[in-house]
Image 1: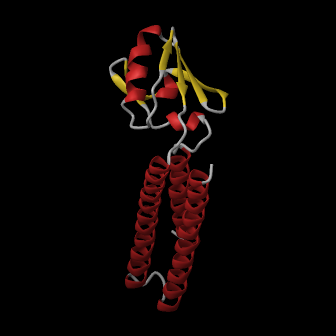
Image 2: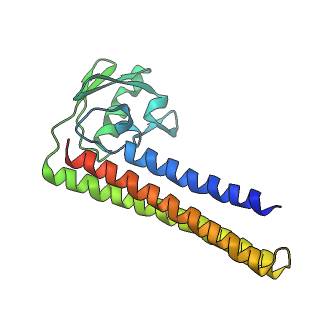
Image 3: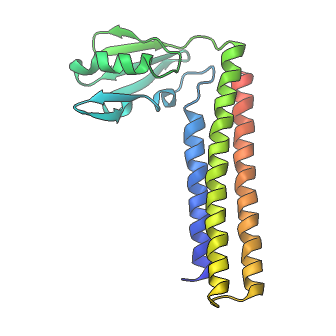
Length: 186
């Protein structure tokens, strides 16, 4: 396997950590309604656990309101219970096969707790990136030990892996700062 393909694989894995982080912070509620808010909600349905978007449509009819249209009438109470128990601070109102979910104003305490959660997501992403870096460095050490690459090439590739790691962590920090600003200033 070539060093270039190894670096591409490390970059792909680091990009995957950024994508997961973006998905995590998109689910954090700011002052505006977004269908992503309900992404973490998982429903007990048909004998298994599935995401809410696989049993219902989620729409945003107003800036401070979500509407969930459940496809199967028998699932309405399970969906309502899952939303209430999701620790998102939401109280759905059942209206036939639909649930209306008004989004309350965020108070200062709730904003601060959302920022803490965002920081936890960022740390989780950084740990994942560091694991990718460690795997890459271990691979380079093994290749050097096995005589596949020389010491100079190993050092050069190690520097490239470290630079890639630093850039990826900087991207996480930038995304976190943007989300923190969005949460605190909405």
